[in-house]
Amino acid sequence: MDPVELLKEMIKFKTVSLKENTEEVKEYAPEFKRFAEFMKGILEKCADEVKVYKVDDEYRKERCRADYDRYIIIARKGDPKLEFNGHYDVVPPGTGWKRDPFDPWIEGNKLYGRGAVDMKGGLASMTSAFCELDDVQLVAVPDEEIGGACGTEYRVNVLSKDFPIPKYVIIGEPSNLEIDIGHKGAVWAWARFRGKQAHASAPWLGENAFVKAAKALPLIEEELKNAFSMVYSKYEYAMGHPLAKTITVNFGGIVRVGTSNFNSVPGEAEFSIDLRLIPEVEAEQAREVLRRAVEKAGGEYVEAMAMDGYVVSEDSKIVKVLEETLKEMELPVKKVVLSGGTDQRFYGTAGSDAVVIGPGHLEVAHTPNEWVPIDHLYKAKEIYVRAVKKL
Image 1: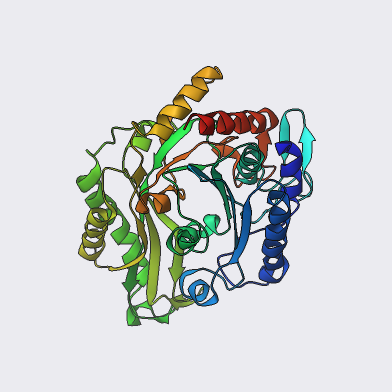
Image 2 (image 1 turned 60 degrees about the vertical axis):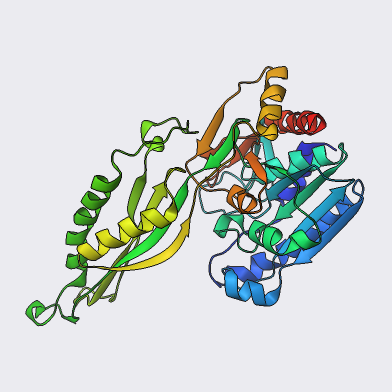
């Protein structure tokens, strides 16, 4: 099975994950079932067993963003010693494309299209490898781009009864064919401030919540700096920048105020805080530091999400096998931690050793004219085949 030809077909499905019930849901929601049926047809040609699961409606409505059906495809061969995991959902295409983002095209060594690198490319290479191997399992999931609750989390928490999770897992996210042994954790929260709404022509009758928020931001930043500025990670990071080894914070990815008029004094204001944690610092510890900083600055702390980082032991057999495989193929051997999050964390809670290694460069994910190197697709397939045979 040629991973390039398979990827070209995968890209044609508009499996766009949406965070809210917008009008676009009507266009994209049917694509998830169509993709699942496509994958089932491909895998039935080489697998001993293939199942398509629709995520339970009650679970979906309680745990997942936007109300549309999600489908998980699981294929098994023999007695699986390793599971391939890949997500088939993609982010919205956005603007700036040279051509239709869902009509893939090739220029030189680059295959273009939404999802080419993140991560239908990895899924194509894994599917191609799966069909040449014995004693493996493949899982194709949605929802990774919006948190994974209706994807890998559901696979781990619900579907493991039907398909037990092997000890070893490879996730085919783009890693430039490097071994990603883990990822950072995160705490997402709102800093919320309250004032008193009034007409802007008489500001003395109100209290501007936006001004309170603006004054509080540097105070929160200083508290976090005092708590974390001397905390460094022992691991190497994919991006290579020295700040990647630290706890970083981003303010104001989203800013909301209680009014939408020029002539109103806002009575409420809030801004988002995105705190990225090195694996050595637990989310529970960081959230308390952040909570105290927000409250000390006069705000209300409202948490949106918290997750611990994940790192697999560098002595794990899957790490050693991948190192050996890369050396045999005369490819660079690098073991790094990702600054962003992946579905590794879900497998970690299940006791599996999960690593990321896949084709392409993370830097072009989510961009217009997203692309994956064609030679990476073939190299990734070979890495997967060789590594699994060594387990």
